[in-house]
Amino acid sequence: MSKLPDLKDFLTVLNKHLRPGLPKYIALRDAVIEMASSGAWPSGMRLMTEAQWAQELPISLGTIQRAFRMLVEDGVILRRQGQGSFLASGDLGRMHAPLHCRFIDDSGQAYLPVYSTVLSKELARGEGVWADHVGKKDIYKIDRILDIGNEFLAHSSFWINVQKFTEFKKLPLKKLSGENFKEIIWNNTHQPVGKLVQYLEMKLPPKHIQQKLKIKPSVVCQFLQVFAYIGQNQPLYYQEIWIPFNSRKLDLASDGRDKGLYR
Image 1: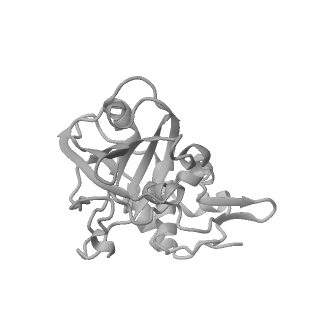
Image 2: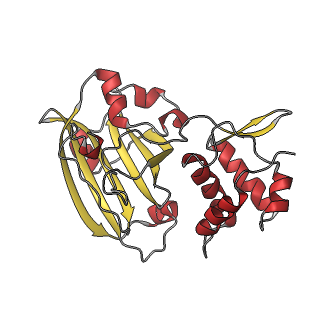
């Protein structure tokens, strides 16, 4: 019978995620992701069966099964026929050197890790600030949830011309998750992100953003608008990021080559 290592530590993490109003299957999913992304559970580790989890945890089997289905869909858990469930290899969607979500950790010398999950990508339609910057033809909108250090979620909407930057159209959602879009642009065209024009204000997010961030309607967010350029004057992409209230300091980049604490 396979045993979960450090079950006591896992219960501590799970209790941290269990809070009023949040479904237990979401808390369980987030706790597993935290154990995997922190390295407490190594990649490739075999997990107990769902029935064994139900014996060990104060959570129903149905709730555990729902959480596991989500973890499988997210690529965090792999199921092998006749062998069981295993933690996937890799960094579980961790973004390398993010540019717009550089939240400084407790040490003051590094950033909190950012885990990206792409929710959707579609051809952008209609009008909007994005159209004034990148145009209306061949523009894709990519929505992402950004998990900031397992502390809070942010929501990103990203608009770019997929005729010029074809990888954004070709790559499936799972492949785009965890990717630094700045690096995709470089790999696609060898053109670096240049000037950044950024605006930050405090406002209530629309209802669909509240739902994705799992926040109450009364929670005010930071709303970050990013106008990115190649060089100093060629429009590249437009991005909107909703960031709920938090105690972290955000290190805003001066341009696309600003390495911040990564230097």
